[in-house]
Length: 272
Image (cartoon, rainbow, N blue to C red; front, side):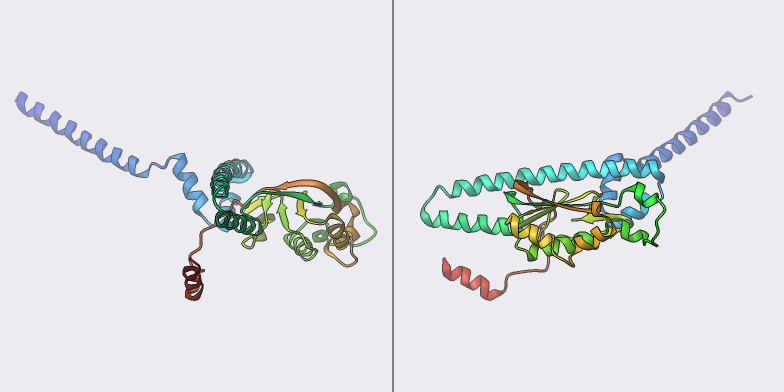
């Protein structure tokens, strides 16, 4: 027997296995997705796509993914709040200059308040919307009650917010989400979303303004709250508040299409 032939055969097997292991390692590395990358990809999806994906993961999976998303949202909101506070500090530092700078800073602060980009405090009212109590829903009724009428929908929240604006509210927040011009209130599946953030009943709507005027508007005949109270008085409640603090809007603020017209730019240059 030729020993060199046997040794050559073994070497060939070793080389072949080594090559296969190297290729396998490369394939595993290419297919590997870390938890952070998975969360980044998931958060980049549209809300409807996220909802459909979560619907197929089972109850435990939905709860886990929702918790991860909520933690990420809270972290991002905290980052936005910190940046807004730093911006406010810089604006206050500007106000220590001459009168023109003080006037510019005052106008900027007013604009931030109207746009919802800064937290505000003041008197107002607290509106709470609740689903009909479970015991009453399950109890036999003499009337054929529409099941859809016994739960809070996105249009109930939207109508209430519109009536508050019409009554002179100067700032509104829904479950801690500031309402601004870009705010969306809609249902995704069975969940109400405000600023693309899921909110669950009870829905608390805080509105800063004249408490008497706002209370009167919320108790008028034929408004959104009266329709809910006709189903059950417990579904809508209103109470005055001497002082409440509403957070700043923490959603996206980038714009791609809306730009200043040329004449507005020219006026700005002339003012300088």
